[in-house]
Structure formats: C-alpha cells, structure tokens
Amino acid sequence: MPEIHYATSTGPVNIATLKYWGKRDKDLNLPTNNSISVTLDQNDLKTLTTASCSESFKEDHLWINGETYSLETPRSIQVLKDLRSLREELEISNNELPKISQFKLHIISENNFPTAAGLASSAAGFAALISSVAKLYKLPTDYSELSKIARKGSGSACRSLFGGYVAWEMGNLENGEDSKAIQIADRKHWPTMKAAILVVSDMKKDVPSTSGMQLTVKTSDLFQYRINEVVPKRYIEMKESILNKNFQKFAELTMKDSNSFHSVCLDSYPPIFYLNDTSKNIIKLINLLNEAAGKLIAAYTFDAGPNAVIYYEEENQDYVLGMLYKFFDKLDGWSNDKFNPANAKIF
Ligand code: 2P0
Image 1 (cartoon, helix red, strand yellow):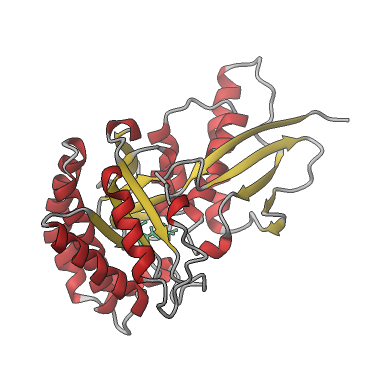
Image 2: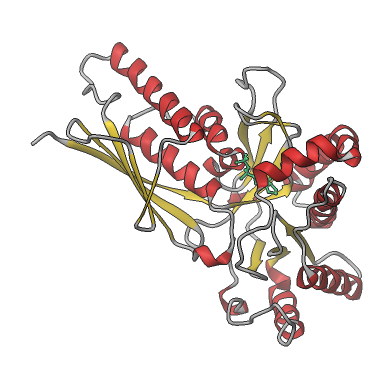
C-alpha cells in the first residue's frame, strides 16, 4: 500500500476595514487598490484543512463540510500548479526528499462557523488550503510569498495568511509579483481591540463579489475617485492609526471606508445593494452611541452583504453590545438568537 503523506493547518476569517473592490487583472486577481483587514481570532472563526497526497490517489479531490467540490476550477488549478512547482523546485535541489509533487491531492476542510452566518468563507478556505499544502510540501514559511498564491485563489484570502492587522499591497507589476500581503502589527499589539459579528441575514448575497466588483469598475464614475483620491490617503492614515492604537481615527476611517465602498456599489449601473434596512438601523444606532459618548466608541463595517462587524475597545464592550442587544430585540430581520452578547468576543 503506497504511503499517504498529510498535514493539517487552519485559515482564519479576515474582515476588511479598508475594502478591496475592483480588479485590474482578473486572471491574476490583481486589485485596483491597497486594502487593510483585521484577522479574527482562530478560536472563533476558522477553516480547518487536512491536505494529503499519495501515489494511489487517482485525482485531486476536495471536501468541504462533508460535501464534494471540484478542484478543476481555473482558480484552484492555478493555486495547486503554483504549490506543486514550488515543491518540485525543492525536490530538484534536495534529492533526499520524497518525490510527491505530482501525486494527486485530497483536501478535507471543515468550517467551525455556521455557513448560515453568511460570512465570506473563501478567504479562510483558500488560506487553509494553501497553508496545509505548504506544510505537506515542507515549503519555506514565507507568508508574503505564499500570499501571492492565495491571492490567485481569492483576493481577500491573501490577507488571511497573517494574524492581527494586515495590508494587501496592490503592487504595480503586470505579473503580480509585488501584489502581496504584509503584517502591519500582530494582534498582541492592540489587545483591547474587539470585534462582534452581527448576523442580519443568512441568505446568499444578491451579487457575488467577483461579478459585483467588475460591474463597479466598468460602470461607476465615483469608483475612479475612490481608487485615485480616497484610498491612497486613507491607506496611509489607517496604517498609522493601527500603529498608534488610535481608536478614534481607526473607527472614523473604518466607517468612512465602508460607506465609500457601498457608495460605489450604489453608483454601479445597474446598482448593487448589499445593505438592507436592518443594516441601516445598525449604522444609525452606532452613530447615536458615538454621539452620546461624545467620542467614537464603536465602528461598523459591512462587506458584500447586510451583516455588520462592529469594532470597539474592550472597556466599552458591555455598553456597546448591551445597547445593540436591547435596540434590535424587536426589529424585523433581526434575531437575537443569532447574537448573544455574552458570546460576541471575537477578536
Ligand atoms: C474585502 N470583499 O476587502 C472586500 C470587501 C468584499 C467587500 O474581498 O474575486 O471573495 O475572490 O478576489 O476576495 C470579497 O471578494 O473576491 C472581498 P475574489 P473576494 O474583503
């Protein structure tokens, strides 16, 4: 019986505070702007993946939460090709290594968060796939290097290879060699930062991110202003706010960037709507809380769907989560079953 080689690794979820929205190259997944995200705690939200390979395997195979998925998609083919060629280089330079680079792979993934939470799982999924295969192949653990491969699987996945505060540098080269993730600071740098995820709807999103961003690039006039005038300055300021642990600035920039991203969605033709009435009520409530406090104590951000992520500092946790719990108790489209403040410690 031929030997089965295997390795296990995890991929965490990341939530962008400066949004990636727009590709300048669809095949290489190169973005039109830099982005920044916070990686959530692996104990709360992650994908756990085991990668195995053997001479006896007949084809590449993927299971996610027990269901079979194809690895014959252009993105997966590209990702596996890149990983195999890195392993092949190692095998050529070191004769002692088993020649496993061309063996077929079996990948088994489990998400520890309910798919019903409506959270983008592609970032955690591709990050876990890449880390587990990199471990199986004993590739050097240069995460920025591996992030270039993750990027080709799903843009935002490149940021999930790092914990803490992460930037995806868009790069300028046509071949994408400088479009990679870097860590701005690890999570210990700002231990009082917390995030809570408010599940507004667990329905599948109306417009998938990939097609949504292409529509925006093609049709939105506001989009050019966003990528040329708004994001470059915001990128520098947000990095500074993280390094200085300046919550006021971080919160302001995070909320403004969420607003800006949803504005270019609305400015697309036909328009793309990701926020619903409950999302808008969350925005109003966070603004009211901040006004009442006389300073910014909480920041909302929304991705390509109506669910909110609220960033706040630990000292304000009881107040912020308590108010959310109280106000949304009886609102349509909101279920307190899905949001228990006692369990909302995420990051
Ligand atoms: C982000 N989003 O920065 C932004 C904010 C959604 C809104 O990255 O086509 O799944 O696989 O590169 O990464 C979602 O898009 O898109 C996303 P692809 P991806 O997190």
